[in-house]
Image (cartoon, rainbow, N blue to C red; front, side):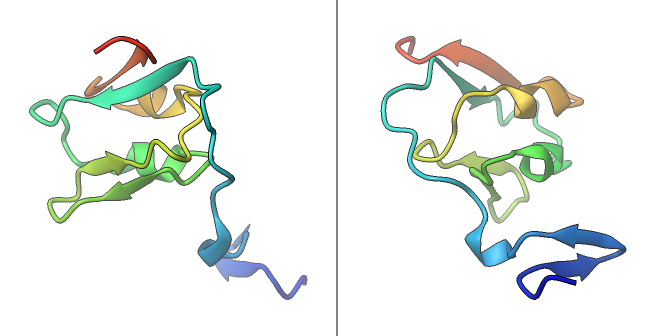
Length: 92
């Protein structure tokens, strides 16, 4: 086994302290927006985010670190309550 991997319930995971990539700068086209009134705090978006750009708040609902979010839409796709929608980067 490689030393920089950890085994959690039979899965090999990369070093959890070094998850996420580099800043996306200004090339993201779409960004996720969360409707906290609809969010059920299931944590699936946090789990599936490939860049680890989401963290739970105190109430377990996600908060997005847009410095790392690449706008892939996986979080919106996995959200069972459709609380996450993808918006064009320049829309408010």
